[in-house]
Length: 263
Image (cartoon, rainbow, N blue to C red; front, side):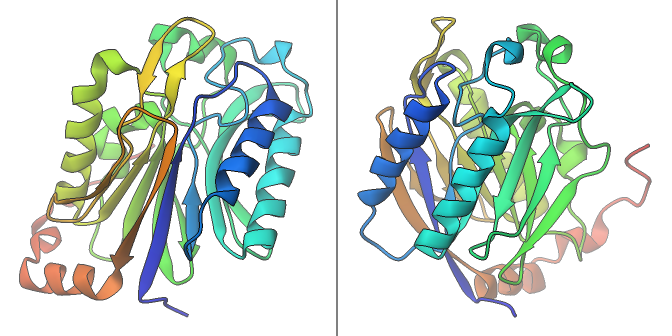
């Protein structure tokens, strides 16, 4: 059943390097500070470890433990949870896996397609899904994307019957913050969809600085929510009727080119 409005909570945190238990505890404490109704919580990329390129140095069970925590939080708070984790496959390879967990504990997942070669992600993690993954949450169609995917608009290209919102979870450094903010807005406008981007803050184990700038942008490119560079959270409401009315008034997606996008 379609839920007309979704209240989305973005959570920024200073992720502790390769420390799963500490990060889970910190997020649990941060979540306890949210005193408003929320339908969907969104956490940063690799929220329980930070964006580390030495996955073998983290417990092999860390991905499953992080997923179990997301499921437990979803049930406890009667809301959806979305984040990515360092995840070890049965064959021993690692992927950067994004989950969208329902409040009943069921979930869908997407493995990051575009690996950040500049940091060596292509050597540490296996290539993910060759097709975009659209999850249905309370009647909303939500495209799951991770960080570097933001730079490749073909992979998020929308269609008339495509998705309503896209979520980017990230560890996006301060040096390219202008790119982050600009591309999130562009993805919302060109795809006539809500765009939700959640980033971390603080310094990681490689001494890279992150300044948050988590945002929720509407299909016209208007910023509904923007966080600063601190550990914080924010809540914004997105509505299906506003989206439908915009697409009816400005039916740009009907004029899009028709061609095959993926292998």
